[in-house]
Length: 289
Image 1 (spheres, rainbow, N blue to C red):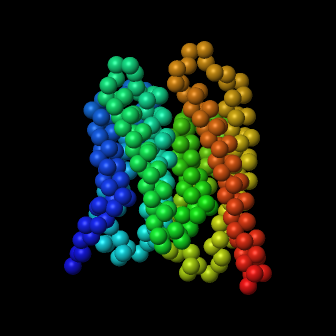
Image 2 (tube, rainbow, N blue to C red):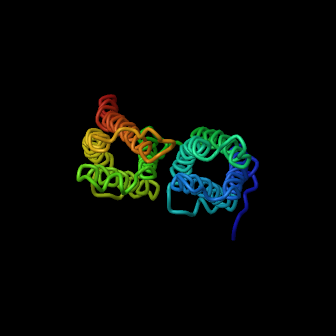
Image 3 (cartoon, rainbow, N blue to C red):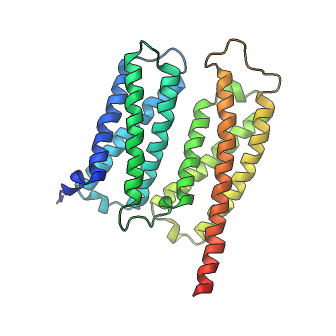
């Protein structure tokens, strides 16, 4: 028998989530009513997906907590809610920049409205991250730690890279194909680590999950090191910016280059922080005992 918990709807985080559902739905409706653009369709599709994904996932979280079914699921609920809130925050800030840049104009009232409401959504999801993190007794999950949050950031940046990739831009050279393979491999394993953590599987593994994550981070840093060098070397060699280029495919090459460098730095930070926690913090704790 379901036990309804009306308190989850009147606490601050419950109110924030209900407003998020309404506003993301408004964003989706405004953008959809404006029609499908003739250019930059991949960016438009990404914006629509983000609003839709955040709306329905937030609604699912509200329903599960309202019916107390969140206590019956075989996942780490604090990790799941923190991971989603962080991911939604990143999604909202990104599409709040992308959508008006590509699709808004001085006479585009619906696009302007969707952009403005999207910024409100970003503020709400950022507030949810803070509220989830401050919940008493719910900050022990891996994804609520700095390495966990960096894992979410790594996968999100990879999504931005994939959104900006064009087959015509990387299929011409083996070097750029290697870069796409590096992005894909790192993305898959980062996503796998997040899923394993949410499903509470690391504790039953026959090896040290923390040290395995460090091993993956070392490989990821090495792969992104090659991508940071190889990608711009191939895509910009003999390929200057066209004289007439208003949001042209060349700009997407710049986005991929910039995001590659950003993700490279994030993986380095992730590796450094994980090594500090696993090897140095644990050693200090053992010495104190």
